[in-house]
Length: 221
Image 1 (cartoon, rainbow, N blue to C red):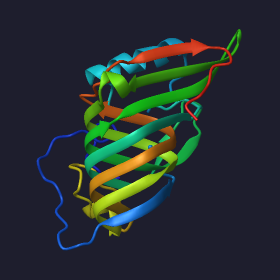
Image 2 (image 1 turned 90 degrees about the horizontal axis):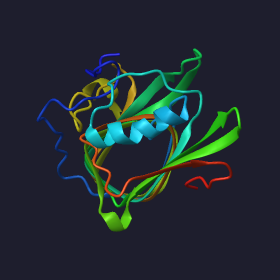
Image 3 (image 1 turned 180 degrees about the horizontal axis):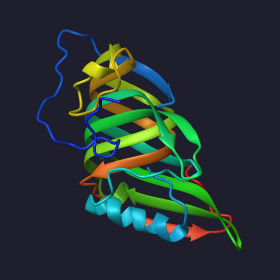
Image 4 (image 1 turned 60 degrees about the vertical axis):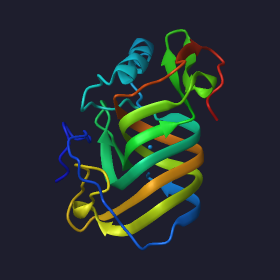
């Protein structure tokens, strides 16, 4: 893979940004199959995740857990988005096809992340929430690996089917030559619901963050 990422995931390092002028806005409901927060093996590690993300201190690469997780937000906006198909590998050696979805200058009205975790005392629901009345959730950069994402989207411009090795809407986010790629500018998506395997955030700020763990808890959706 030719994408210039630390350990396999994107990291912001360049000032270059794509400019696609003269294209009409793309608007409508979008469903990205194999398209967007991170699942890890234990409850303690899951709790630590929220703190690391808020401090922008997450490691650049990791083996994903064997569980996917749900992420929802009422409204997401970003200055740019680039995406191509990738594969995440879990600690048990299994591979999970995903769409790597890289976003630049991200703002979310709120965020909810949840997953079910098996423990010796039964299945628990881990749930992380932030934003809302406390203020928006922001990140300089967000890279999400997911196999399903839905929402109502509006794009300032869109390039669908671009060679993944030439993507430049988000710095240092490129795939293999000849691979299908997608990039857009001026992204706004409402009613975001995704099933993800991993995520990384740079300078991730989660206002009003709350973490809860317990049996019979409600997932985000």
